[in-house]
Length: 333
Image 1 (cartoon, helix red, strand yellow):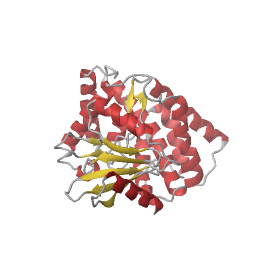
Image 2: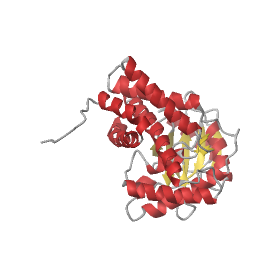
Image 3: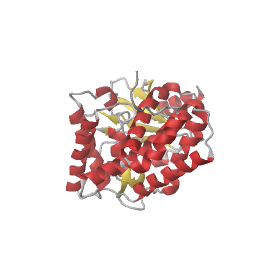
Image 4: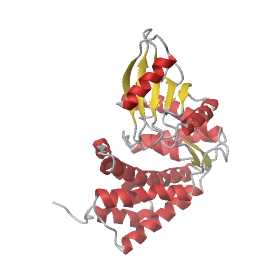
């Protein structure tokens, strides 16, 4: 309650004499909260509440400027109090891609998302954002044994199981680090893209953790989304369409689509492993149980990728062991 009072006081000082109503706009998987501030004339702005003891507004500000300069639609920063952890932002509306996506709208919305992604990637320069290097990739992968296996499943890996997992992680990272490098939003999915048809679609949010890394990462986030599922044939079609745009834009993608799609799937394996760990942590550490329902889809993505590529077969077998899943052979009744 104290934070809300501080925020209200800050807004009142900034807009003396105006009656402003505050309502929750959204929350994310961190300590950040967002409020919609509505003014008497009907206009609205978004206030980010990022407690300085837990969050740093600096990356959000820097990357908003960086992505905005690339020509994509991100919130404008209209006011800031870094010491208190408050930002005042332009309002990108209340309709997320997740809410708007259906069979009729998907082609158009994903086309717009691909166009925006290519713009971000075309603006990429080394040395501007943190590298998505092996150390960071491994920290993310480690969330899986720490939180999904250890906390969520309550299991301890045997020595041989630990070796299988470490070998799989090394193979995955080797593929990722060999891919073309660009700016990576890192959470480019249906909950962080807003439908903004009148002002440049999509509106892009939650980019403060952006890095410089593998070109397939954001496409995986978008097309193998933890919150919405599409037929694999449709995902393949959208991946081809992105790849064609990327080649036309001279982005560092392989000339052969088959090679690109393999990279896409291996990158997906890393992301799905990480996300399972994050969702388990959100539940067991932070008490956020809303992500539990999304775990089966993420695991399904991971299992399919492991089943498709022989070097990841041992990891699939490990997943079977962890879930006590018996491989069916012969007739079943």
